[in-house]
Image (cartoon, rainbow, N blue to C red; front, side, top):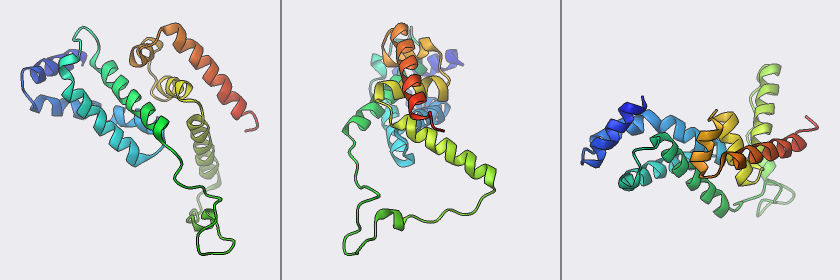
Length: 187
């Protein structure tokens, strides 16, 4: 498939803008998943994925055709997401009191969950909790954990995406797993 993508890239560089639509169609889900797993918000992930494709399109002339396009695109998406995480500040706190009320906090404003079979609820809660703990990791560990274990990229692909040596990837994966293990030790 990489050869087909390389042909599309050549067409795009020659001015065939319709070829980029095929590239977007092929990679859109993967780019969205990378962004979502790092940022944890559907709408922000959609915005970041769209921004990644826009950046890839506007900078297509900088793409080195000797390399894998997917790695270049994933690096753009990862860097955009990391930048957003760094700039992001919490908008609200759930335990903050609601203005104009006495004793009500944001927790009381959350919708009640529908009753699900017990096993599904436990599984969903555990997945949510683990995802929350992954989001709490520092960005340099979060990115390698997401790319390795959720997106299942190889060590070399992660190194290419993040533009760091494979040894650094291994170290960050190890330290990220240890940090995650400590955070999850009571589960």
